[in-house]
Amino acid sequence: MQAQMLAPAAVLVLWSLIVMLWMARTRFAAFGQVGVDLKTAKPGGRGQNLEGVLPDEVNWKAHNYAHLMEQPTIFYPTVVILALTGPVAADVALAWAYVLLRVAHSLWQATVNRIPVRFTLFLLSSLCLIALAIRAAMATLFVTPALAG
Image (cartoon, rainbow, N blue to C red; front, side, top):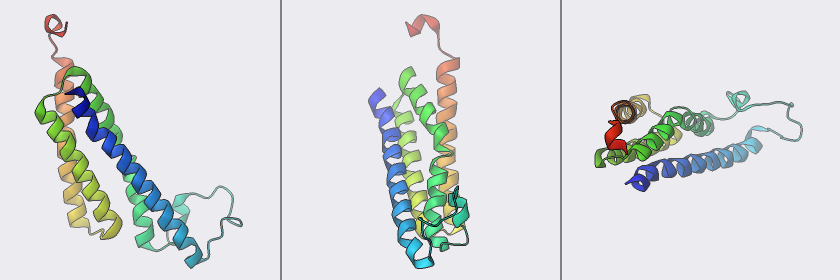
């Protein structure tokens, strides 16, 4: 069951890399359209400097990539804790639900980006993560040493 618990985390890592490539491709394609020349760009530029320069739809991919570097950093150790302590089927299901909701959130934010749906997807994924975190805390705080053995 440990491998099944880690699979959602591996898939979310792959999804994050896909979003990174999507962001880069979209940004580089837009640079020429708005006159950004990387050879003459000011040194030390950052992604935030592209706000208001690139179209909003282009920046949405970067916003989502940043989101994938935020809350999922709590998801990854939670999944590892559960994998090490012995997950149950509900833990695996919650982890997959979290990943599927995050992928849906990514697709929505990067393309349509209407706040009510985006917030709902975020809220649902957050509830999955909260449940996983509670399970991880319970698995580590309430271990019976005689049974751990």
